[in-house]
Length: 117
Length: 116
Image (tube, rainbow over all chains, first blue to last red):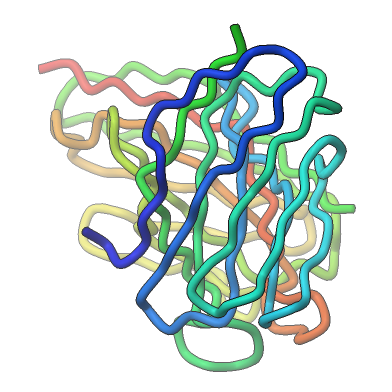
């Protein structure tokens, strides 16, 4: 469904635990992104990656980590250092950078809702 | 970095009326401005976008206008229908500069309710 899969859909975590959210795409997209969605705050960029083995911090990277070992996969780890991790997390991908037609269009996954107990 | 402000946060319109959502951005280097629609329980999807070399773009009942001088852009929905009820997000990026990639900055969203 849509070519980009996030798992799990719902996740509960105890304080002090790290959790990893999975994001896989089969669209052959170069770029991948993680956004956090909170009510009234839109979508805030956590990390993004334009190519394999390279990624950059977004606007709210503190307390999060990512890896991009494969083109298809961009997992996000929410660490215990993230002070307010309860949120809805959206992964997205795009064709990539440059002047290719449609390069900027984001395809989103269905999201993962993380709740800290 | 870029900052995008979006207004209003909620908008209630009667079916058949028009809806207008406005966004302002801070970085004059931004040159790509998409709009995403997120229906309840679904993922955001692109509905229309505009680049800085264009002042207006239309797609059926949806139009987007851009004022580069004032650094604001707007989404116009005409003849609204119940299926237009959703949250709409504007965004801005320096989309054509390779080094910056596609680092989209989103507005806070507008919840649109179309009353039958």
